[in-house]
Image (cartoon, rainbow, N blue to C red; front, side, top):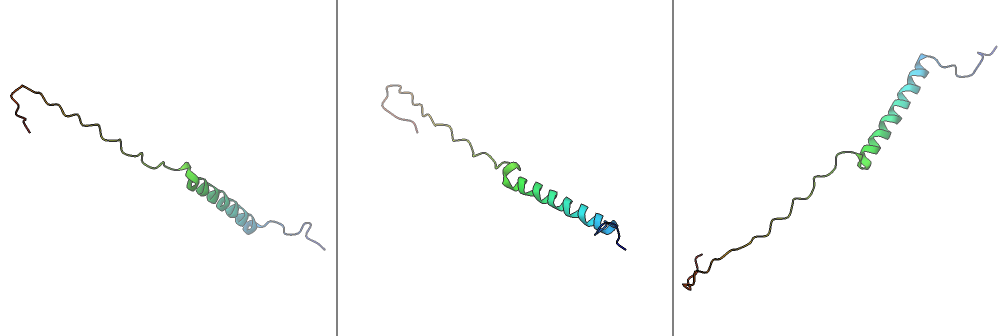
Length: 65
């Protein structure tokens, strides 16, 4: 007298299958996030603007610092 099919899914077997599927899906999402879909690194700081020094020559020959 057989049970019909082998390994008939009882409540525990169903629960274990759902949990293992959920864990696989969770791990897949974590791997995708770790692969670079997550937050981007901060952009590099902008370069400093060029300093322009302006001297006005009034003809006296002296320079002001």
